[in-house]
Amino acid sequence: MQAILDELYEESPWTFEQTFGDLLREDSVYYLAFTEEQKVVGFLALSVVMDEIEITNIGVAKAYQSQGIASLLLKQLTELEGEIFLEVRASNERARHLYEKFEFEAFYQRKNYYQNPQEDAILMKREK
Image 1: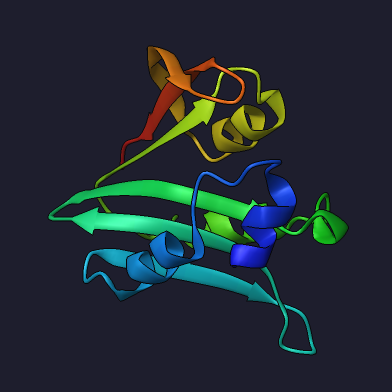
Image 2: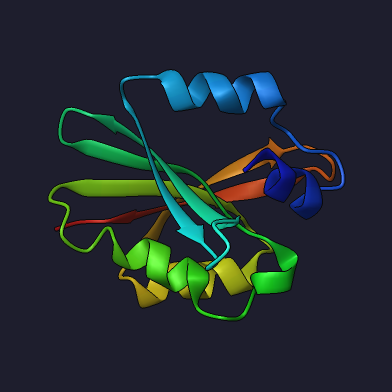
């Protein structure tokens, strides 16, 4: 997973230690996508607290993008009850469109939330 993060971001906001530590948390849930050779090519990370779920990260290796892997990962959430939250860069139209396909709706904009480059975050949620 860390290799995917390092590939996707010029400067990854998460260190290996942070990613590994997150895997060990009781409130963390990870869905993984594998190749036939058992190589991880995508993941979806969730934080689950009571009846509230937050997508904390989603990533697909560049060589496997545009093959429906992110959709397959998000499809795993369709059976979950309760609100699901996420935040996405305002400029990431591709991701926002994908989330909207899975019934997420924008409800708030956090000014200057992201760094490198500085950018607003769009908060989205799906209610079920």
